[in-house]
Length: 71
Image (cartoon, rainbow, N blue to C red; front, side, top):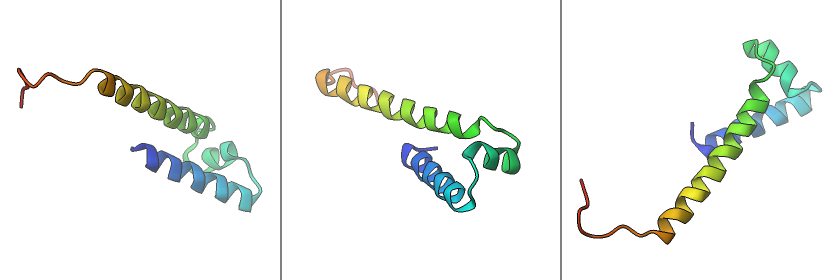
């Protein structure tokens, strides 16, 4: 699942719960039997975003050498 897909799902869950007047954990228990799913989804999305940012920064600071590129 991509970061944007994570965010879209988080937003959909948040909107649904606000309309239904229930917590995300209640929704997840009812839908999939897992009260911790929403919190784990949010942490995973944050972690992916952080890791992607770190990776992009590292690649920008360490450009590849043109020789020895494997394809």
